[in-house]
Length: 113
Image 1 (cartoon, rainbow, N blue to C red):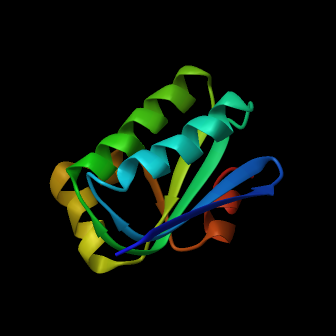
Image 2: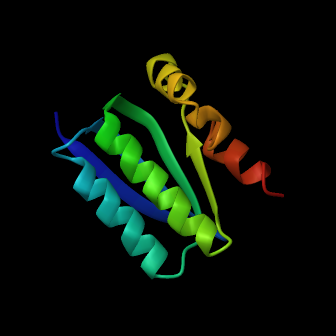
């Protein structure tokens, strides 16, 4: 499966929209998109994984690494996800208590207003 990663500005947030499978082979593309946004000074990130069908430990590692980097610079990092399988991964790993998980981009934005 292919991975598509697109970014768009929703000031003051940067939205990284991901579609496909995030695994050991595709995770570097996700990491690159997130690092590019952070390096450009975008420290209020929303990663929309609503269209992600598969997420492995490498993908989780990318998300955790990005969260640490953004928080170190006093930014915010939220995830949009309603996929039950993916939410279960966040719950099992305890990451549901670390990430702000939301039903929509609008919900993630509203959590910070």
